[in-house]
Length: 374
Ligand SMILES: *Cc1c(COP(=O)(O)O)cnc(C)c1O
Picture (spheres, rainbow, N blue to C red):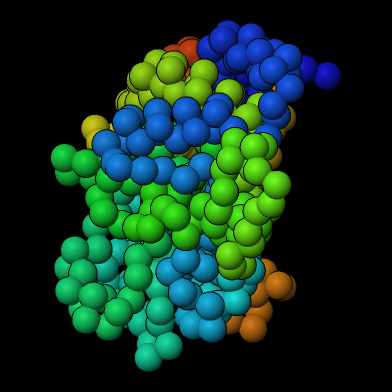
């Protein structure tokens, strides 16, 4: 079954039309794994971001995992907001570290210097700010303290490809930055990810089974050397080709996301009991449109569903998940947010009419809720 109503999905990949030929070309070439396509994609990403080098990997989760390994986080504690995709936390565990959950700002759903500082302990080795909704996170008030304690910042910028922090793109700020290119992210490869590294060589070793020779070098040699720990986390040529096509059309999808988010802001204004989570749209390529509904979030969700409008919760707090119970601690702000947040459909194939229909439906439910409870 194909879903044709754009509002019927919270998120959906956008096709520029060039992906099919790009993939067909790779299939015909017979070189499907890491190779020239992946390397060309890395160079194009680096040029786009304005950085010296980018390491493409299989997924955003792998990007976080490898970045944590490269930063030497194993055995230590990594501060992460509870309000994130489970991938952030699983990457910490996979790297042999422990998550230390922290609060988020209710207006942005991102961490702040204060929510991070509150969570620091003697065991903290790294901090993983999640750039929620694509919005950059400013930890400069505690930057010197973090440096003095030798705490590494590893940005989970899975939502934030294309966004800006001051004069730099997210990723070009000098911090270790991880992107996801899964099907619903601002840029997609089908599945994919990237790390903007401090030390690209180590990350390339980690991503490719600890083998440093390129596939081109291996094709002409009789042996290869395994020089250290490595995972099977490379980005194949088929996925890289999709990413290159998507990157070439990025200005269009980024503009659409900003336009649709601004339309939501206008259309949702003045609804009692509803607040829009602010993404700082002038500097951000919005990944999502999230609202906080003080009372009756589940009622709104159900009413939208009845009208064929998709909505979701991003994310159920991780510190309450069974798998992460060992690291649970009271996080009252996040617990309250977990019952209030609702993600509305936002993806580049939507029209402004779609946005108005969604916003109108939300307004209608909340007006009737107010009438009933008043
Ligand atoms: C998507 C996402 C990830 C993981 O990326 P994948 O490419 O799906 O592995 C990590 N963190 C956050 C916040 C995400 O949204």
